[in-house]
Length: 197
Image (cartoon, rainbow, N blue to C red; front, side, top):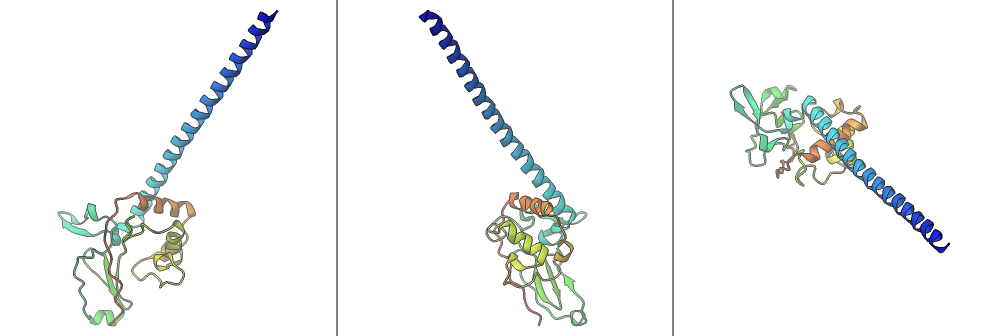
């Protein structure tokens, strides 16, 4: 009789162990699946951000360029790093500016007009760019035109077309920010704007 109880107890213990082991494996599988899904979701967000940055024309002004066989080409290692800090700043008076016209430098990283001279910012994740920015700061900069996304700061200067982006969805803003945080950081301190002469 004791051996029957022993047999039943052993069988129950084996079943309990099998259920526990199966449950642990299922939990581990579920956690692994969740990590993979999160990585895939993040990749999709970054890919969407890259697409948006491309079609929104961010490279037009924020990426230094050099002349190639087909015209201006983005310098890959400086992509989205803004006006190069080591470039000479040319200041001049032009009667067209006095009449309300604006001018751009050859690679479009600087603009001169009635507002003075403005320089395209560094959008890379380096600390001289948006490396220390929060997503909320980025949203405020694009949707409200606030410099560095700070309430007490100045407005973004032309030719930055922030008003074109003020109706972006939160998902698109998150994607653009995610993409910009994923690119190569470039150490480049963009010069401050120069007030009108």
